[in-house]
Length: 494
Image (cartoon, rainbow, N blue to C red; front, side, top):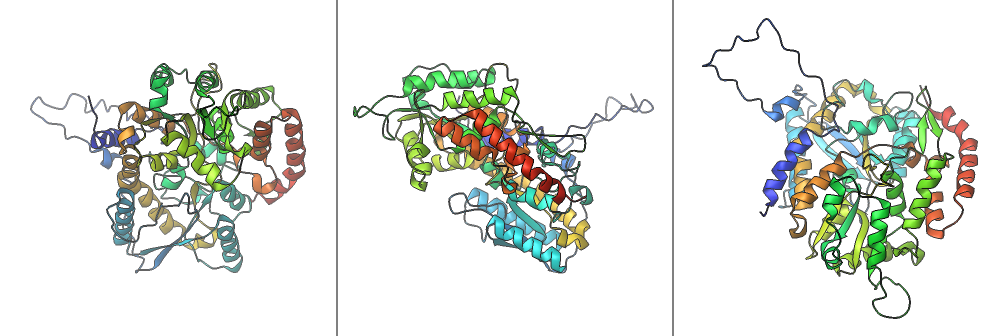
């Protein structure tokens, strides 16, 4: 039976409401004094799902003042969390536009936004705090820079944003424990953060190539819990072949898997391993000398090796054309089975005629219990409130909560419809896999401390790309981290 886009979107909206991003609350105990009071003729009014999660916050009156947002992004992967100048017929644009206007009308304010680089936004916020200027009420920068601002004390902790309820399903609560400092959170994600969600790693597979090689049903492998490096590796080996007969594998051949070095981050996060754990004070502790971590990296080295059939474009070129479009073209030309990308890649593919599907990043092995995934630390923007805006903390918390709730009702469902509206991903199995991915988030500070010289990911990318010594890279990072740890601790504000 063919499932239409609208049906899938409706199904997804239900899944969004019961997503494990929000912490489930215990059921309300039955009041024995009223039990059985209902008569046979009574009707019980249905509870509206929207009403269950609506924060029901009062309207503010900002007197038409600006609610100013500074946000990051780039031309290749633009941040569209708030940017919508007018209604233009695009699902996501129109949902964002209408959400913005609803916030403005309710609270009598004007949403303004300013694009800049992460580093420039951080510098502007630091200057504003030092100078006592309230120039921005909401900042969106990636995790690396969000963590830098948190460490340096330039952000308001979410515990002080009293009208924000991070237990609500429109907040991604599964990411909080890994990104906290001294049991406090300074940045968070909600259903408003379509930019960050779009940067979520996924495995895109070409259904035509998959069918031609008569592989087992990949969706069933995933839902049975058997999607692992070993299973992927076997398929990759079978597909890779010298299409043009020149005696070597190039970007124009048959490729079992194609990706840039971003895939190494994805495979690490897919393992669920915490490269940085926490001590009793909730402070970072490096955790890369464990044998388990070495085994995970070795498994990724083997999976991504030339001999295994992986075409890692960075071994040939690091130009944007290579990193972004060699990968896409291999899929759209039905020459590649797997592409490790993100949901933004899915957006690009949906306008093509390619028959493709989406599944999670594979587990390391059969012993791994759950599929895991991170939000891309160097792209996806988190929501934070600058310390310079603390005079209006209560108002900002009200506006922020309404933004998250209204986005849950309109923006995220429309974005999900954008993902599934392409003719090739209108199948219920892809929807199931997307929901598996949505419920697989965790947070590892090991992805976020590059600004402090703890570049674990850079070191591991080089290990996998060049097949160099894991132990040497780990020892180097351990030494570097030890040297920088005191600075991190000194910068962390109470």
